Image 1 (cartoon, rainbow, N blue to C red):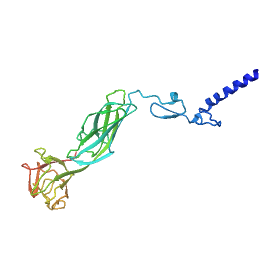
Image 2 (cartoon, rainbow, N blue to C red):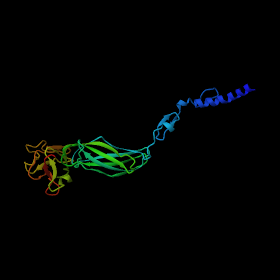
Image 3 (cartoon, rainbow, N blue to C red):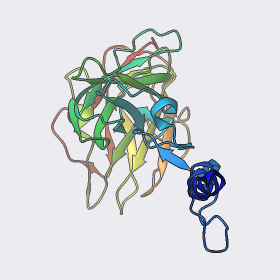
Image 4 (tube, one colour):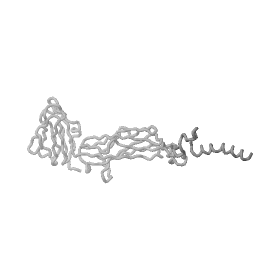
Length: 292
């Protein structure tokens, strides 16, 4: 009687034990339909997958709950020249549950970390709203003056600071490389020349430094132009003079490059020798300075 009872108990216990060991079910043929427990996985709250079923002890410690942010720009280097603006597209990305407002600030520094205040940075919006684990964008504009600074290859740093103080601010850097060239775009459509508004910026004229290359560019579709400069001791030659760089006339779509050679006396006035001028008197001018 005792032997019969033990046999019955063994018959009941063996399948249950097999189920616990394999992690699967025994089919009619005695095989395992789902494989061994070594193939099991579990998913952590941060989305990572862990082998086995011990997520409760193996998963990474959760973030504080406020999340993380990262900030990027759409280029590593922006190439430009004098009297131009550079636009950097800035993207703020939230992760690990971050959402909220993020303020943006930008600065330009040289290779020593010294601020280059002559190159101001502005944003089209100084604060962006990031949805949970989403992105938000803004445009940073860097203004390059008409005169060269001691360093023409400087670093833009954008700092993104969340309104939630428990979240660490993000930063990104990009290079701003400006050539020592000043492009003057002139139109000669019809019978007259027109000049950029910046050339009338002040009564003293636009500042330009010795050593700068002025690219007089004909952006018109008809008429060659000739640049007339008042006085030959100005550091800028009249187009066509013996000391001036070729060509003697500038056709539509072409550029006449001229290097500023010295500081003259007072401001340097200039105008379009041919065809006639079209702009407020007394016309555009430069004030020549030494490089910084």
